[in-house]
Structures are given as C-alpha cells and as structure tokens.
Image 1 (cartoon, rainbow, N blue to C red):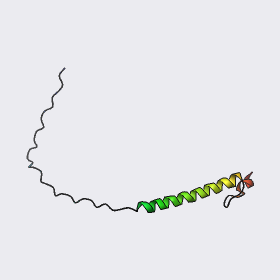
Image 2: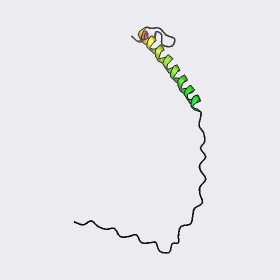
Image 3: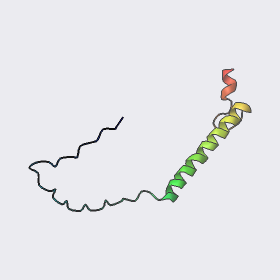
Image 4: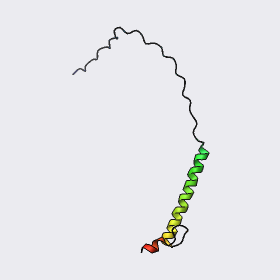
Length: 76
C-alpha cells in the first residue's frame, strides 16, 4: 500500500515579501543578590532552626532547655 503524498504548499496571493524586522536589542540581565549573601541568610536560618530543634528535644526528653523546659510534664 503506497503512502499518500503531500501537495506542495501554494504561495499566498496578494502578499508581498515580508519586511525585514529591525534587530531587537539584547535584554539587559539584572544581577540578583550575590551568592555569599544568600548563603549567609540560609546558614543563619539553619543554625537558628537547629538550636530550636535541639532545645525542643531537650525539653521533651530531659525536661531541660531554655524554651521547652517542663512543658511536657504539665500535660501528663
């Protein structure tokens, strides 16, 4: 069984050649914050989170800590 052949595209009537577009100016890339400052913020947040989690574990397991001391003995 032979495959179908596509007909050649006909040129559009009444249209002249496309006008040449003016070349676009390259987009100006705006620099973001430097990597060092982003890493500084992320590291600070991770350290604060680690301190809170460790204090939570101390309060839950041992009843000591700065923020969570004695909170779990009251509920039981």
